[in-house]
Length: 480
Image (cartoon, rainbow, N blue to C red; front, side):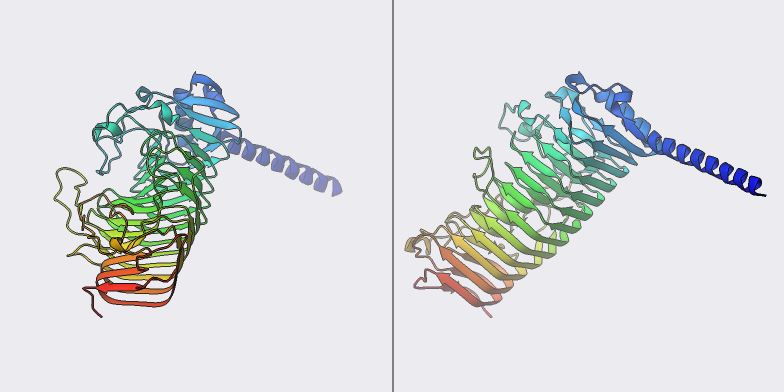
C-alpha cells in the first residue's frame, strides 16, 4: 500500500512540475524582448521596424514588449491593444532627429490642430489596455526640429509629439522619464480611463513644449508627476466638442515658464467635474526661456474663450512660488472654430468653481484676476484661505487706468497689464465669496488690495492686507 502511495505522490509531483514549467514558458512567451526581433541598442542603428515587429507579435497574445539596457534609435512606433511597453531602468528610446522618420497619422477625431499636428514618436489610436512603464527614458531629441518660419500654422508643422494617444481606453503611463519633445510632450485626445503616475518630464528643447495635454478625455487620474517645461505644464484642453471631465490631479511638483496648471486655451466642449490638489509649483531649473518667464507667467490659469462650459471645478492645497500671476480665471470670447466648417462657437459658461488653501510667494506686480465679459459673467466662485505675497510697486495712477475688455484676445494672466489692485481684480462676476484672504507686498503699494467692478451677489470677509492702503477694497458698478 505504501508503495502505491509513494508512486501516486511521485506522479503528482511530476505533473505539478510539468504544469509549473508550462506556466512559466507561457508567461515567458508573453514577454517580447526587442533584441529577439533584431533591435540593437547602440544609439545609431534604426530600430523602428524591429520594435514594431515585437509590438505586432505581442498584440496577438497580449503581454509585454521589453526594452533592455541600451540606446535604441527609432522613428514612429505604433502601440496596439493589450501591449505594455516596458523600459528597463538603463534603457533609452531615442527619437530620430528628422521629420521624415515620422509618417503623418490621423487621430480619427476632428480637433483644432489636426491640420498640422500629425506626427508622434509613439502613436496609439482606438486601442484598449495599453501601457508604457518602467524606469527608462524616452527622448525625442526635440531641438533637432528647427522651425524656419513664424507664420501660422506652418511654424507648428513637422514637429512630432513624444506620445500621442487618440480614442483609446484603459491607458496607463507610469514611472518613465520623458525628455525633449519637438512639440507637446504628450497628447491624450478623446481617451477614456487614463492613468498617469510617477513620471518625470523635462521639456525645454523647442517651441510649444507643453508638459502634458489632457484633451477631451474622461476618467483620468494624474498623480506623482515631477515636471519642468518651457510652455504650459499640466494642461487640460478641449480642442473638439469632447468634454474633459471626471479628472483628478494630485501630488505633483511642477515648473513652467508659462502656466504650470492650466485649463484651455481651447475650450470647445469644456471642462466638468475636475479636482486638483496637493501640488507644488516652483521656478524652473532652466533659466533660459523660449516662451514666458524664468519663474513662470501663471501658477493656476483657468481660461474659457472658445465656447464650452466649465463647471464643478475644485482646486485646493497648492504652494505656488515664483509665477507672475498665481491665480488667473478668465471667461472671454475669442470664439475660434475648432475646424473651419463648423459654426462659430457661442459664448461659453463658467460656474461653480472653488479655489482654496493656496500659499503663493514671489508673485509679480500684475495682480490676480477673476473676469468675464460684459454679456457673459463668471458665476458662483469661492476663493477661500488664500495667502499671496506680491512684488508691490503700484502707484495711485494705476487705480484709474482703464482696463480694456479684450474679450477676443488670447487669455494670459498678464493680458491686462498692471491691474488697478495689487491683490485681486474682479470684473463681470455673479456670486462671489472671498474669505480668509491674506495679502502682502515686498515694496510699497498705492493700489487697493481688491478692485471689484460689475459684480453681483458678492461678499468679502476675514481679510488681511499689508501694507494697508488708503482704500482696502474699491467697488464700482456693483450690487448685492
